[in-house]
Length: 94
Image (cartoon, rainbow, N blue to C red; front, side):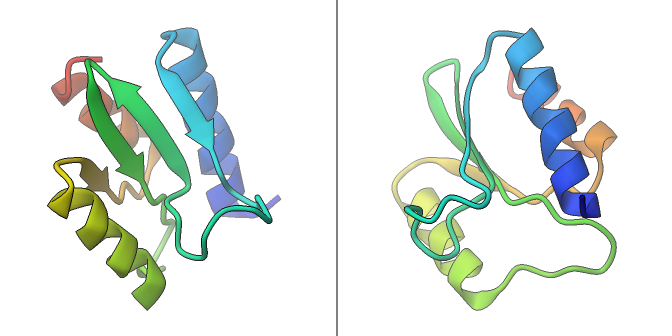
């Protein structure tokens, strides 16, 4: 399992333990190319996460999704560690 997949698993477990609605679209053949890894609803707010590890950067199709989400009033973050992910959730009130 790759480093990003390990991070996704940890993040999903964290969300499930806190009963935060979350969908992990990683590896789904039905998701549009560039769809963020994790989609959540937290306190009525749509929030997306594109998880990255190391020097990995967002791909052009991922940047397009980020712009569309933000233009629609949602939020998207690109945490690079589990602690960064949990800090974002905490700041959002989760």
